[in-house]
Image (cartoon, rainbow, N blue to C red; front, side, top):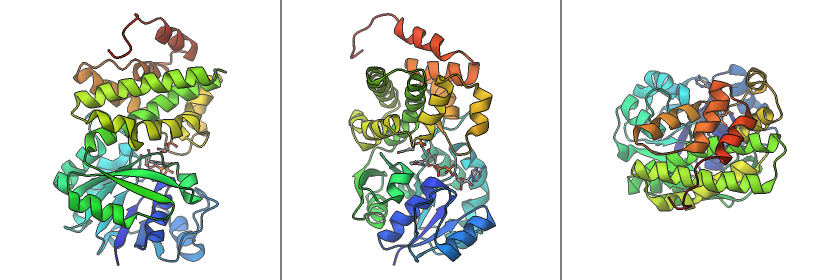
Length: 333
Ligand SMILES: NC(=O)C1=CN([C@@H]2O[C@H](COP(=O)(O)OP(=O)(O)OC[C@H]3O[C@@H](n4cnc5c(N)ncnc54)[C@H](O)[C@@H]3O)[C@@H](O)[C@H]2O)C=CC1
Ligand SMILES: O=C(CO)COP(=O)(O)O
C-alpha cells in the first residue's frame, strides 16, 4: 500500500488527495488549521474549499507535517509558490529519504526566478531524480467532481515518474509520463499570467476573438521563453501547455482569470486583492517570469503588459492599446 502525504489542504491539495486515495493510496493531508484537519477526519469533507467533495475514508488529516510525512513514499507539496522556500526550510528534514517529492505548484519564485522544482532541490538538498512535477488542465473543482481529465507527470527519473503516475491513475484522472520538467513548469506558471490577460479582456467586454488571440500569442511567448531555458518545444502543445492554457483561460473557475476579469471591469487593484482569498499565482509570478525572460533576452509582451497593470497600476485599456500597436512581425518570429 502506497502512503502519500499531501502538504497543503487548499483546493488542489485536497482534490489531489482524493485522486490519490481513489487510486488506492493511503493519504495523509497536512493542514495548517485545526478546524480543517478535524473536518477532514470527522466528516471527510473540506467544504470551505470544495463543498461538493466527499473524501474517501483512506484520507486522514493532521496539523503535524512530521506526522503526515512519516513513512510516506510520496510527498506532495501544494502550498502557494511564494511560501514554498520558507515552508520547506522547516520541513526538509522530515521528508523520508526515499520519497518522491511532488510539486503541484504553478509559480516562479520572486527575486530568484526559480522554478518550484529548483527551489525544492535547493532547499531540501535533494537531487532532481527525486522530484516530480504534476501539471495539466486540472481545475480542482472539476477534479473533485471526478470529471475526466489528464495530466503530465514529469521527472528526470523514470522510477519516480512511474511511481507517482501509478499512485494517481484513476478512472477519471489519466496521468501521462513526461521528462521535460523545465517546460512543464514554465508552461504551468506562465499560463496563469495569460489567464489574467484573458480575464482582463473579458472584464472589458471583449469576446472570443480577443481571447483566442491572447491565448495563441500567449502560448507563443511561453514556448519562446521555455525553449530559451532548455525546454522541449513539444511540451507547449501538450497537456501542461495548450491543455492547461485553454482550461484556465476559458473557465470562470480559474482564480487567475477571475482576478483579471475583476480588474477588467474597472475594480481597483486593492479591491480585487481584498476580495481574493485563494491563490492566484500569476499576480506575483508575472513579475518573476518577466525578470526570467529578460535574463535570457526573450520578448514576452503579454506578460510584460499584465505586470504593468498588476504592479505598475497601468489601465487595462492602455495596455490593450500598447499590445495592438506593437511593431508588425512575422508570426513565427
Ligand atoms: N486550484 C487549482 O485548480 C489548481 C491549483 N494548482 C496550483 O496549486 C498550488 C496551490 O493552489 P491551491 O491549492 O489552489 O491554493 P489554495 O489557495 O486553495 O490553498 C493554498 C493552501 O496553502 C496554504 N497556505 C497559504 N499560505 C501559506 C503559507 N504562507 N504557508 C503555508 N501554507 C500556506 C493554505 O492554508 C491552503 O491550505 C498553486 O501553485 C496553484 O497554482 C495547480 C493545479 C490546479
Ligand atoms: O491551474 C489551474 C488549472 O489547471 C487552476 O488555475 P487557477 O489557479 O487560475 O484557478
